[in-house]
Amino acid sequence: MSEKPALKVSFVTITEDQDGQRIDNFLLTHLKGVPKSAIYKILRKGEVRVNKKRIKPVYRLQLDDLVRIPPIKVAEREEFVPKNLDKVAGLEDAIIYEDKYLIVINKPSGMAVHGGSGLSYGLIEALRALRPDEKSLELVHRLDRDTSGCLLISKRRSVLKSLHEQLREKTMEKNYWALVTGEWASKLKNVTEPLRKNTLQSGERVVRVDLEEGKASHTRFKVLQRFDDCTLVQASPVTGRTHQIRVHTQCKGHPIACDDKYGDQVFDGKMRKLGLNRLFLHAHDIRFFHPKTETTLRVEAPLDKTLKNCLKVLRS
View: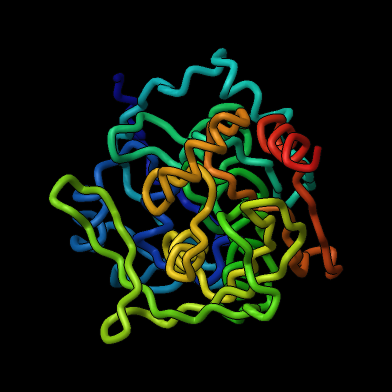
């Protein structure tokens, strides 16, 4: 890791993409490689000025603000994401929609959306390595590591803000396909059990139904196809709790196929004999309002080979 000193004061004019962002978060993004403690130190000492005035770390930037950034040493880290790995390089082929403002990618099962918990990198870090000129790539939402399908990534902060607002207002529509054990009743269209997230001593997250302390949760369900001892359902989460679809199917007695955390071992054994070696949960399509083109966009992610083959065997 080398150090590249910035010897001169720099000035940045705030654009639409930074409008409304807190000054501390702006500096953390703008000065990549600078420790967080150093960022807050220059803020505390008044070395960062906005329109020639001292500001607090909670100050929210406005369009055309002029930010003065003092000389500060920026540590340059070597890119740790190996671009030549098949899994990373294959992400380019997994992109199912892209324009100047956002990306929709068909996330592969088994890849975490971001690094952490012992992982050196995740999908967002890999994308940033593949697209070094895109300075503002951010996850709009998340998918579990073992879940595949539509994942939305913004290229502009203004787009990220708009899409987050759609998530909060519940106007973004996400539909998942899940293969569950047993015969899902057609009349079971809404599951609203409250969910509580627990972290075990090992650091593993487990979610349970908790009628007293759980957070309000809502998933809509629709039967897509029935088989002898399982059902293909569409699950549409209204809220976005951790492991929501997986726990809502489990609490109704119909866990998802090959779910190593909430599944049914006997059912999973049958599915593995059919060639299913991954969680059968796929973010099939996503529908949202594009904040720049001002049109409603619907994007669909095709099933991977493993899920396609599983359904083919069940249908035969």
